[in-house]
Length: 232
Image (cartoon, rainbow, N blue to C red; front, side, top):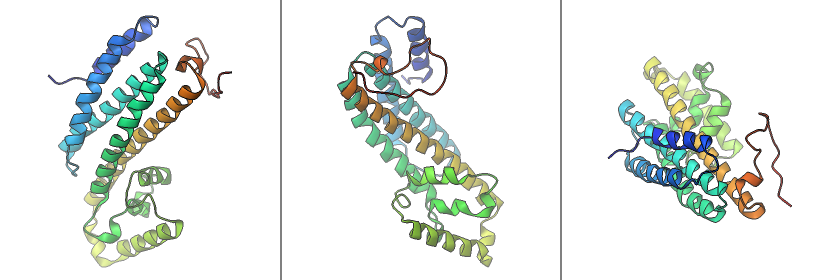
């Protein structure tokens, strides 16, 4: 039977209402949802198809939420090593999926356009920020390791392609598809970065605290930015 992501939200709401209760049931739900949605995400074949992208997006985002929820619950009860092991297993798999989607959606029949830096064209100025492009580049196997000089050459080639007569093929419909691709891949890059941060936090907890509660502000703390420091 399909497992819905709101199942996690229900358990987390219950956790907020009864913070001193055992999180065992919430952990079971998070683990079950994680395994189910990870399987769905790993089976999906990347393709520029609206329905397929939507279904995969639900699975991928749900997988990230379930993984983060399970890891945070483990850290909260002091199971730091278990949280680290979970993230060591899931984060590389998640990155692999993100990179597969990036490689497929960035690919183009024109080799000069098979790069995320095609989005630096002036036609995207009102839609895609340079920060978004750099985030996507982090999950793009073909762009991530480029040197500044190689990036400069990529952008030069792109300018030439867009200025040539055959660029009429790159019409408004093509432009709109690129904007959709950028939004889709940026979501994957952000989720990947958040899981990376959680993995670093799990390491910090394992080295410096019995529980994540020792490092995080309590529920009564005012909203704001807090500096984490090792527990003496």
